[in-house]
Length: 159
Image (cartoon, rainbow, N blue to C red; front, side, top):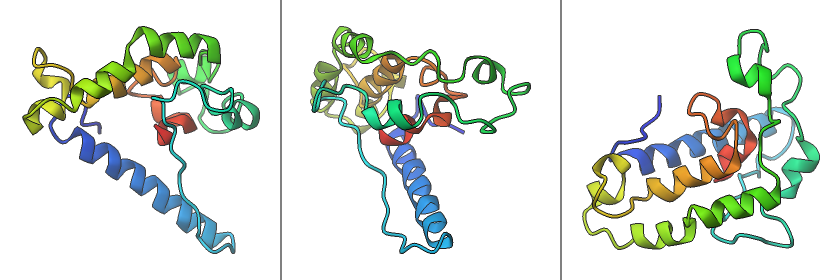
């Protein structure tokens, strides 16, 4: 269940990420480690860091959808496409610029009413915090462009 288009969107999204982080800590401990693990954060307002737009670790370590992550025969578009439609750094950089993600982020902070700031549901009153967030999803390419499949790529948990 997703809270896009609702005033509760920012809190829901953060809670979703916290649950993932707690699951990683639990798994780390079950593997005999100390649980001292956390999710990094991808600051997409910095268009490029150390020559990377999209965190290079994902391109290097998870260039395609891991075998067995989903049943490809039952996973629809995700099963057919996997991660093959993620944009490369040049395309992603341009998409983020074209979407004016930095401007959207700055403008959402100027919206005075929380209910207008928190969700795209109230369009016409400026940008909400959901606006640049959604633009990042679209800039990344599939599966991040899909509400159904976005969380199947690790970058979902860093944005």
